[in-house]
Every structure is written in C-alpha cells, then in structure tokens.
Length: 367
Image (cartoon, rainbow, N blue to C red; front, side, top):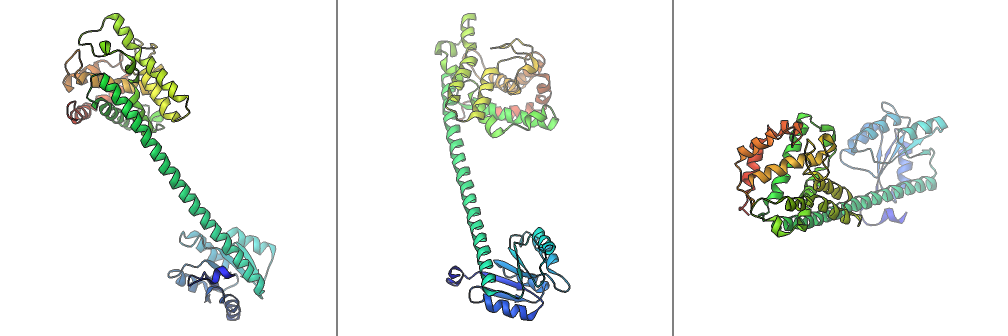
C-alpha cells in the first residue's frame, strides 16, 4: 500500500452507496491510503465526475432511482468515463448477479460487510493492473511513433536516392530536371480524373499514390546505359541506333530487379519496374519491348505513356523543338485507340488546360 501514499498525488476512489453506514466504514478503511469521495447516490457520482476523475469507483448495486447496473451502463457508454475501473459492492452475491455485472464492464465484486484486508488488497491489485495497462499503452504509443518516424526517415531517404538517380538520368538525356516533376503531376492529375469519372476506379483507388508517384521517377532509368552519342544525337536515329535506344526499357527493368534482391522497398520497386518496362507499349500492340496490346499492358504503363509522350512533345529535344501545348494535346487525342488507351484519352480531353498549366509551371529553364 506504500505506493498509494507517496507524495500529494494520492489515487482517488469514489464510493457510491445509499447506505450511510457502509460509506463511513468503507471510507475509514480506505482514507489512510487514498483520497476517498463518499457519495450517497449515482446522481452525486455524476456531479463529482464533472470535476474529478477517479482512479477507481466502488459502486453499490441496490440503490433507489438509479441502481448500480444502470449506472455502469451509463459510465461505459461515455468515452470520458468508460476506462474508469468499477468494482461492484453488494450485500447479496449470486452467480447470476456477478455475471450480469461483469458483462456490463465491472472488473470485480466485493461483498458487504467489508473485510478491510480483502477490500484493500483487491483495490490495490486492480489499481496496479490499471497502472500497468497505462504504461503498456504509453509504450505502444511511443513504439508506434518511433516506427512512424523511422518509416518517414526511410521513405525520405528512399525518395532522395531515387530522385538523385532520376536527375542523373535526365542530366545525361540533356534535360533540365523538370521532366520528372511534370510527369508526376500529369500522372496524379490523370489518375484523379479517372477515379472521378469511374474509369478503372476499382483498380486505381487501391493504389498507394505515395508509392506510385515517386516510383514513376525511374521509368527511364535504363537510359543511363545508353551512350551519349545515341541519347543526345541531334538528328534522327538510324534503325540500328533506335534498336539500341529501345533497350533502355529492359535495361531499366534489369536494374530495378537488381535492387529488389536486397529485399527493400518491395512495393515501390515493383511499381517502378512496371513503369520502366511498359511505358513504351502501345494500345494497338506496335510498341516495345514486348509488343503488348490493349489491357494486357498494365494500367501503370498505359497512364505513363500518356504523360511521357505529352511531356516529350512539349519539351525541347536535341532532334526537335517544343510543340505548343495545344498541338501536343491534339496529337495525344489523335493517338487514342492506336498509341493510347481510348478510355484514358476520354479523361485526358478534360485535362488539356491542367496539363498545359503544369507544363508552364514546371517549364524547362526555370530551375
């Protein structure tokens, strides 16, 4: 009982009983160890609960107006009081009465007349259990926070590394670095429109966009293996050179598969691999590297194809000038059913202004 007596922070117990003698006896047993509130009715209990939160309630069952069963039902239905442990006090004890009380949320039964030693020990045990529960909750809360913080650190490191790798790819591709930002914005805008329109919504709402968008940065990872002479050639590629250029899709997949062997970022890398390997496939089957057709092309690749081609059109490349946004949108729309999934193009038609705005906001040369 020493723990309950230390300092001024004594634990608080409310005794509720319409029998004045029981209150006097109970308080005399407990007041040496606890701050005791002796209350003659359930109404008084709820008045005091507005001002004081006890560590435990001793609640008589047989009382006029509101009995113990009704009182505990009210307590447990109110989130302010639901976690306060309640011990029933009764002069009658039967298995059915105990079952009813325990079913309503009581933690124990104590019979009158009181045995001082037994009453003190039961209260001490239950308060210790409550203290341990609180400590466990605090531990779990701290552990969850630590896991969340660590996860955020890992995700931040992951995105920083991936972003740096993507920047290196763009640098070799004679780009200014905004291509990644633009394609991510295009992807997000197009996905949101598709969900709003109910197009592929069942699949899209299951996507974790916090993983999908960063993983899209690696769609051109394989270009890092293509020679500068081909990657930045100022004119049209020869058939042989174009064949080499097309290998960047498979080389990107192979590079990501090597990362997967380390066992980290499984979902992230799986999405990245899909983007890398399928964003040059075409709806009519004339794309590369596998010549996939229609919905055999993963949805990630079909959406990236729209974003990637649009961005290529509005961007300066060693072999061409930038197309105006209106012309780029027209070419994308005309590609519906051949290059692009027609369902995606129906959504894209509503987004031409948004795509143009993204292209303007993240314009090359503004870094």
